[in-house]
Image 1: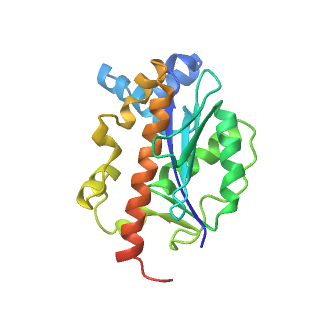
Image 2: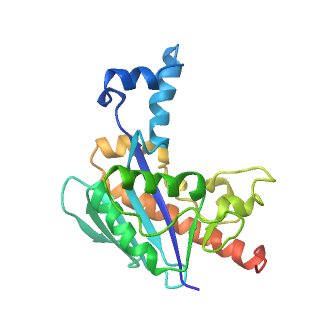
Length: 224
């Protein structure tokens, strides 16, 4: 079976970029400064209030990958391991490239993709008038064609959910967070124009997901 593993990084738009009515709606229950800051932070999590900064994809069999990332200039580079080509573009171009790649694979693998990455990609694409080329939210209770590792490792949420970082540490997999960057740093990195760092961080996340998939596929997966 041909497989592709993918992960995204997102960044919320500034609260001030929304019109006054929308700001009031978003802040409806934020009656303290702490709650206002929480609203601003959580804008990252929703396709209606955030953008896709980066999409990383890796084929777990060939170990080859692609990263599509936002940058202010045309940029292209190969990762140090020589396995991944990183190409810059606008958010629209990033999503268009993703939809060109994804139909070629029988199965796609994510970590929490059903709850986050997949609906986010589909909604952002619709907002930018981009046609989806595949249903990223198929029947949940089958790991084919979509294997969401968070669903699988919690046995469809019958056990506790942990972060990708925590699962990696327990399975002896190097986490990209070990390099001192987390998803919470996207705003700082983007505003500092550290676009390559965002691309490499997202690539690290998808490599960790690929290794976690190997553990699940080898030791836990039961043929369907």
